[in-house]
Length: 337
Image (cartoon, rainbow, N blue to C red):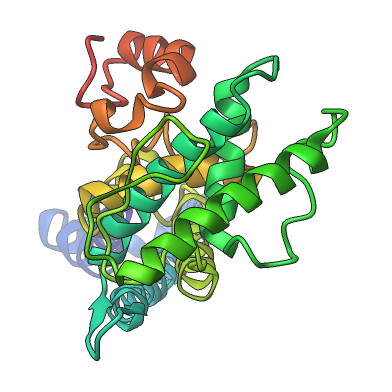
């Protein structure tokens, strides 16, 4: 029985005692001369009065406590309702943002929605291969990460965008490497435009590699307008869930809401989100403050084999995968852990 039920029972018992006890005493002892027990009654009243007052005070406190608890629960319920309304509204906006994203091809049609992430992956892989060939003679620490960052920024902003000013400030000839790769990619882009994407593989004079660019639109022009809005909103929605107090939604429920978000992401969306994280553009997805990948498994369904050409996710998250395993979680589905 809850506090409210106990309060009602005690109150009713007190009423029964107050109204029924005198009548019961009179019916049980009718021969007794009650006129001579006035002093005794006064004594009993003096003793019982404070007790009754304390009981009344206790009942009053309990009533206020019940009301306070009810008010607090109502606040929590309202906060939860507001959270759910806003969350599903944000989820709806996410879908609208995705459906509004497009790339115009060489003809009169458009590539719309999730398909953009598949074509962006083709660009990224081609860009990486070109940059890897251009910088093949250059010795760099963690070269794969450097090439991944460069390739992602070039397909994110576009090779002609002045927003790309550096890849890694700690590398002495960083700007020189960036410009060399830009010039090489421009040659592939020009050849692709000249054939209007009729070929699957492309090569340029002086290079021994053949690069797959099976696209029907001008490659390496950038996806900044679509991706920047998409990733900002996705991050804001994820952060909105995890920043809620435990009184509104607990950790298990937060994981469930992040699972709902993950269910809206296609395989290639999760794959490109991983590459977004590898660039300094998306470093906040997984750091000391945020654990969207390890704790909430936001990229759980990425195909590892499609990412291995650059930085292998199994190596990138080796320690985190092991921690998740200890805690009974599976950070990445396509893993040996």
